[in-house]
Length: 499
Ligand code: SAH
Image 1: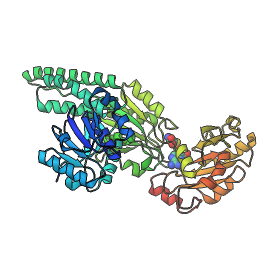
Image 2: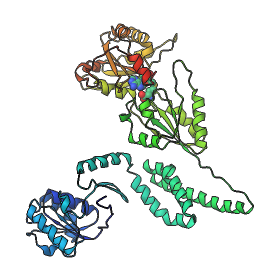
Image 3: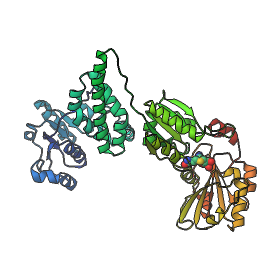
Image 4: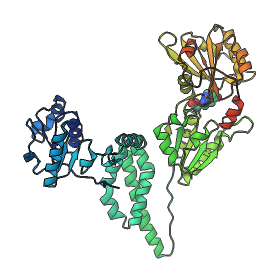
């Protein structure tokens, strides 16, 4: 470690930037945000800098000096930045600063720098600085981008709330260990989740309730200890109904990933791919509750009970569902049961199969020339049952996506044609959308059954019906050649745990 990360207070501190161009502007922007009083010395100072600092210049906080550099400007400054395009001048500034023992940064010249500007993740009051010690600033910035995605925006507010309550917590929980446990519970549980969901007031209330409860427990356990017993406390857990998307782990949301990584137990469906499951916290229990054709489902009632019981033991429960929990996912029924049992929950949307299949097959669901509306329907064909629903699927300017339709393809197509849909209407089968094994088969209502009999695309698959399907030929982009093959599909489906 050849530089040491310190967090330096610049609020109301005088600092000097020599140079008035783009480089100076970037530093001025950062330092102004840290509350510094900035002096800029340069014969030319850009209009952008004038605008950036206008307010502070008017109030006398910042000063623009349209003069040639002179070392007199260094006096009394906390830090100096040399950011001109004149190398000799930058060196001069560095030497002068050194003589006065003031830390100096010569932009893009690490050997002449006493300090460097890190890549910053700002969740005020939490601040993360990343440095490559001048070796690979782009890498540091890439790392910053990763952290930006992993750290919810609500972190800053969470830290502010903790700051407000710190003294109170200290006075009510006397031991260091007790306080550490209290804060860990707050930051890993409901309080932080509420804050990340933007429910600041409820988060504050939850923290206050938790403090009151802890205080009460301390008092009663003290009383009980006096008569020789101790009391164990139990806090209730929470259930997160999380959409896992169509299979490609990159299509998870940041929120889904974060909750998966802090789960104590995960209940997952058949459509959740192994790759997605691998992203759950390593030591979380992973319980399969899905339906497979050969193996009967854990009945919905049973799943509800599993979720409720796990939450009651204080666990953080993730209910991981393929696609989106509220699109043919029975998420609604699960939260009804949770609500009835008084268990806290959140629902995290996922990329539903229709969206994934559309994007990954190059079939836009709407298009100015072809479709103005979309319908998501499920294969409502129960063997033997009468069906009138086809009459609502005849609009030629509407795209219809059928979930769970492949097994009943023939009856579906016959029904549509009999109801009056033009047999020339294009239709696509998109199997295993977004996965490396994705396959797309296109045809018309008149010939798709025959084509599928030959191609035998595997499940999971959905059907897209409507004029937009004709765009696949030109817009397909995903996969090796965008063409359908009927190769080892079943085999691959098994490898992906998708049948
Ligand atoms: N909640 C899920 C849907 C569950 S119903 C979602 O929002 O996507 C299951 C049906 O979804 C399957 O029968 C199939 O029609 C469709 N499906 C799910 N994942 C799929 C995928 N990767 N490719 C194609 N269809 C998929």
